[in-house]
Image: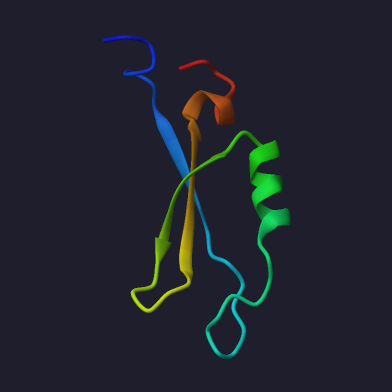
Length: 70
């Protein structure tokens, strides 16, 4: 098993802002860029069956958050 296979991951979920019609109300670019600056990377979007994004999923190595290298 290589180093990447044994790495622990942590996840962050972003829910795009919605208006009263339940459609995306604002571009989440600023929030996505903020998470990217903290070391998160986009891995998946989870969409409503009728269209639109329900969740945006990010991940990063656990050691990036804790700084302990484990």
